Length: 227
Image (cartoon, rainbow, N blue to C red; front, top):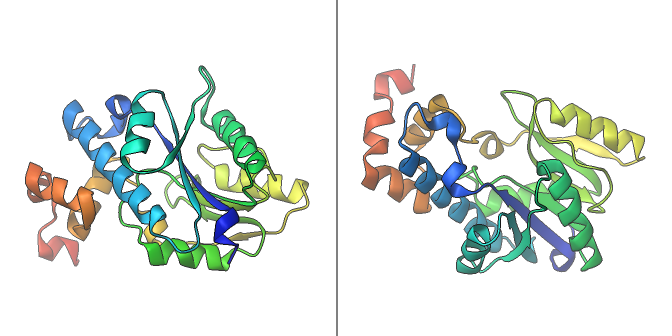
């Protein structure tokens, strides 16, 4: 496992008021925003409690995500205006490396089922270079660990897992692909929401799903969930 003093976690967070638009056929705009907020809170809480991580940083729009970061006891980097996700991650990685980061975990804010054990296991598996968790649905990237943080330029989006692997090969970095179940449960579409409600996660997300009535509305009957 990398040294936790030099291992940083970076969580890119979209403006909550515009987050989870693909859930808009199932949830109201307010529900989408609240769900995104609670999922991000669970992810940052998990990361702060990981033994393998020394610093947790949120990347997003100022001042909204800065306020969230302060509330979650995380550090903050403001997005570059007009830049896309990958360019912003490149920008953040350069800053973190200059501040002493030697290993960087990039993880999205919509993985509410991950635990400290999941993250620490991923970091133990990392032996330098690039360790990547692919998205099961579109070949994207659900998490990655890289040493050094600026070892490659980031290429997020559909089929980005393969692009990141090719970039690592071109840079002469060792790479490995791993598929832990917890890193597959990203919440983007109504079908993901059904799965999440069936899992009944703990933390802020689980409480919100129950208190809002979303869980009872979207949870599959036992006979369907186990079929």
